[in-house]
Structures are given as C-alpha cells and as structure tokens.
Image 1 (tube, rainbow, N blue to C red):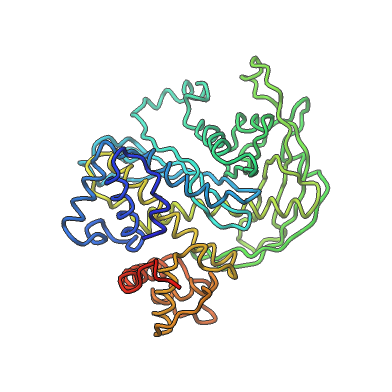
Image 2: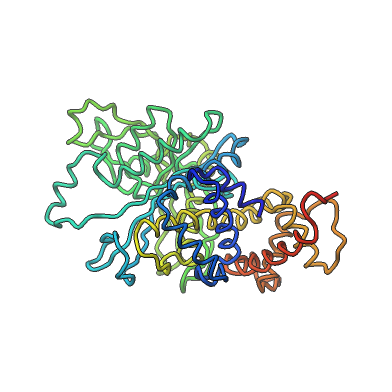
Length: 453
C-alpha cells in the first residue's frame, strides 16, 4: 500500500527486490498485527519469502530503521518542537531454547535481548515515528564484579545508550526543530545533565536526591522550600483494581546546580545548572500512594504555565510504553519462532514500523480529532472506509476528520461506540485495520489511484 512504500522506500539493501519485499511485509503485518507470520501472510510462498528475508545477510536492522527514520523526519519537518521520548524494554525468548545468540535478561535462566527506543512525539502528544534505537544482548558475567562494572567509563556501560541516543536524535533532526529528550528515572545520569552545556534539552524524572554544588543541601529539600507555582487537577486513569480518580497536584520549582560526583572531580567538569520541578499530590485517598514526580529540565519553570507545560510533556512519556506494548502484546514479537538472534532483530525492526503506525493513528485521533484523516490514511483507505461504512459508491469530495475515520475503523473491529465506551482501544483498532486492509485491496482493484477525480 502507498503508506508502506513511503515508510520503507529508502531502505537500502543493495537489491530493489528486498526493498519491495519489506514494503509487502509491512503492509501485511500492519493489517494482521496479532497474527503469527503464517497466519498474517497466508500463502506458503509468502511465508517462505518472509523467512528468507529475515535470513538474508543483506537485510540489516540499520537499513530498516534508517528508512523508517527518514519517513519520521519527513513528518516532523515543519514542527518547531519535537519530544524525543526514550525507554528500554526486554524481549523474553526463554521458551525458544533453540534460538541462537540470546543472552541473560535478568533472573537466572531467562534469555532474550534488550531494545532501547527513541520515539518522536509532537507537542500535542501524537507519536510520529522512531528517531533512534539500540538493540543488544548481555554476556554472562560474574555477579561479584558489579562494583568493578560501576567504576567503568560511561562508554563501556549500558547506560551510555541514553546519552548516545540523545545526541543521535539531535543530529538527525534539522536545527530548525527544537528537540527535547524525555526520559524516566533510569535516565537520571550525570553525564546526560552535562549535555545542557552543549544546547541539548531534556526533561527527565529524577531518581536520586543529589547533593547540590557548594552546599550541604539536597535536590528534594531545595525544591520543597521553593515557592509554589500553583495547583492543577488531573484525572488518574484506572489501573488493575484501582478505580479512576482525580488528583490535585502542587507544583514547586527551583533552579539548582548539581554537585559533581566525587569520583569525577579530577575531570574538571563544570557542574550543571538545571531547573527542578516538584509535582506532588495533595491529600490522596486512603490507601493510595500519592503521586510525586521530581522533574529535572533545561526548560524554563518560573511560571505556572511553564510548569504545567513541562508536566504535560512528561506525561507523553507513556507513548513509548504503549509503543513497546504494541510490539509485545499486539505484534506478539516474543512468539516469533526464528532460529537466531539476528533474524529476530530484523523481524523486530520490521514490526517497529507496524507498531509506530498503529500508535500514531490511535493518538492522532485523540489529540487532533478535527484534522483531516488524510494525515494518516491514504486516499484508497479513506474512500474504501467511507464506502463500507455508508454502503454507498458515492464518495464525498473532502475526507472525514481523524476522529470520525478512527471511529469507523474501530466499528469495523467490533467497537460499539456507546456513550460510556470512551475512546476505542488498540485491540479493536487492530481488528478494524484487518478489515480495512481487505476493503482497500478491493477498492484499489476497482478504482486505481490515478482514476480519482
């Protein structure tokens, strides 16, 4: 389909047939994200072609991701600010004992590999695509060497991925677009804060109550004693057995200069000065853990408006968790039965394009509901969708809005759309896209794209 060709057209494998195979795979897997490879591809010839593709040494993970990044950069070229949201996830292939090249992933006996993703997100919360990634396996190490590993140079540690990917995202995006790295507590790394001196912007949640420069004071105490910017009320979503509730949050902000860690003082590093934003919940319900975030950022936080903007942008960090959720629960990467780590990583790179598109469509409908659906759907897709929804061959001149189109797709997947149903979830959208794929295929047979008037 046309959108898949745009996402994959620049993949350089040195063989145009492999690029075309990538386009076909992405198209089929997008419409059948929860199916196994045999179920998604159907015919035995297509299944064999897919396995040959993942086994081909010319097919590199880097080429697939590079093509996807080019498509992402095309989407964000006119955006003055973009959030580069990072996170790490683990893929567990312990049950696939015949797969070669995997490594330990935590508890004894578990094996798989790691993925660190950097997702471009617009300032209104719509995922745009992948900007950078890292995939790796761990080697078996003596647990008694932890202290030695802690003292290794940063470039020899896994935590270097946060700094490397932050730099890579900034290099990839044109200078005309401001890039703000967003990360969770794992990104509370002193070397990341040093990037503030070289015009790198970030918004991360603090994990450590760090000492301040030339002071006996600590980070939390400094923020707690800062003036209150104001308060805001947020809706805390339902989780597990916890019901949805409202939370009143207090925002306090202070400018702090962090103390250089003792073991780094010989390097003559200039201590970084950052803004600290403390977000705390007032009077949580009995038995509930109060919300508390300490955010460290290069962005201004002197007013309530600036503080609320940082808070809102930090909440978009959950987009990367949803992206990883789609890869695992939607695309079911951990059920792939491929013989080597390299083949699994190539398959994951292909599925990343699938997951990125599904995520973008879901949030674009929520955040920009009145935008034309052509921002996410091809001409063939929205026309086929309209025809199927209205049981007519007469298609209007102008496309429907994103909100309307996504609702129609969800209804194809079984969404009832009652008042209390809320927004359609990822699962019904996946099912809806399966049906839309078949409808679009038939539409394009009867109405080739160059016949649109």
